[in-house]
Structure formats: C-alpha cells, structure tokens
Image (cartoon, rainbow, N blue to C red; front, side, top):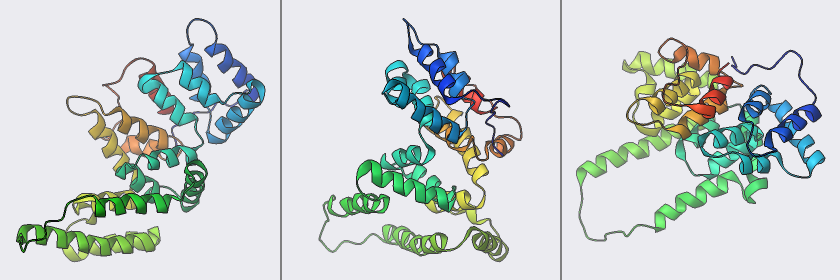
Length: 275
C-alpha cells in the first residue's frame, strides 16, 4: 500500500505550476508551497505538472528546483519530481550496486523496461552495456601477480562467489511465484531462510521475496548509529511512497516509521510522503 496522499480535488496542472512559480519568486523560496504541491501529487500528475511548466515558462521544472533548492531537501524534491523511470535510470547510472538490485528485483517488469528505455535516452547506451562495460573495466584494472602462489582461503571464498553466480542465473530467469516456492523449499530442506545467505545474494533474495522488509532494513540502517545516511533514506522513501511504503512502515519496529535524525524542510517533505 502506498502512503502518498492525493487530495480528493486536485488543482489543474496550470494552477499547480502557477503556485510553484510564485514559490520561486522574490527574495526567498516558499518551501512549504513546494511541499504542498509536489508532495501531494502522484507520478502521472507530477508528469503533467512538469510538461505544463515547460510550456508555460519555457524552462524545465527540475531546472527551477535546482536553482531554488539545495541540500538533502533539494535532492529529495528533485528525485521525487522526476518521472519514476528517469529517476531510477539516474540512480542506476551512479553505479551504486544496491539501487540497481532494487530496481531489478523490487519493481515490476514493465517498470524495469521503462527504466531501460529512459537509460538509453539519457545516456545513449543500454543499461546492460553500461553495467557490462564497468564490470569489464574491473578485469583490466588490477595488476595480476603471475608467480605460483596459492591461498586456499581465497580459493574457498571465491569458489563460493562462483557458486553464487549460478544461483543468480536462477534468480534472474524464474518468475516471482516460482522463486517464492523455491525459497520455501530451501528453508524446509536446509533449515534456514534463504535470505540469510551472505553478501549480495541475500539482498537480491530479500528484494524478490519481500521488498517491504528489505526497504525497512534500508531505512533502519540509514538512521541508526552516529550519523544519518540521507541518500539511502531518501531513496527508500521516494521510490516506495507510491508502491508499498505503508507495508514498509509496518515492518519497521512494528510501528510507524519515525525519522528522528532529520530536520527542517527535508523532514517535512519526507513526512509528507509518509502520509
């Protein structure tokens, strides 16, 4: 269930654009007005607002937001304003492994196709080509020692990595219902949940089997400890607010999601998306 709250009567895109334009004018920026408009519009409504803003003012809405906002608040609002496939294509291009796994495993096949199309349009190459190219760079970057030296600990650990590559083939070629049945059989046969597998494989399994539990963990890890990982917190809330953020809240300490380490307009915007 989504947490985004859209008013029963939504103003026209032109009215929303005028309110946003007014928020940008003068000596200061009316952040509350920006939150009120964009924080209460779904993806299709935000797309219409962006298109109308371009028509009315001959300037992309995202460019105006870039010039008026800054910090974590500005980054969150801009990512929210992007069309979801474009936003996820940008996240994927940053070569952050976790967002790529989330996009591939915790979204619908139709959304993944849209992300791939947006990626190609933005960066003039396919998402697959870019990931493959960056992987190949890793093969030619290190210096390979060519003497006959063997470390059995390394051999064992990397044999496990090769085993995981076979598992990844299964995860990438089976539908979600088949995979969930496989996960249940794994637990019955081996006595432990499949998502307890270490490293990236465990993240992939959690994203496929129970996305809300994965994103609850992302949020929890982002705010616990000596600092706040605003990028992870922003990504989790913005990408799931229109999908299953209510379920994520239910997974988080079995209570409502509390953002204790944020403040100001950034906190207000995230709380708006949390409903």
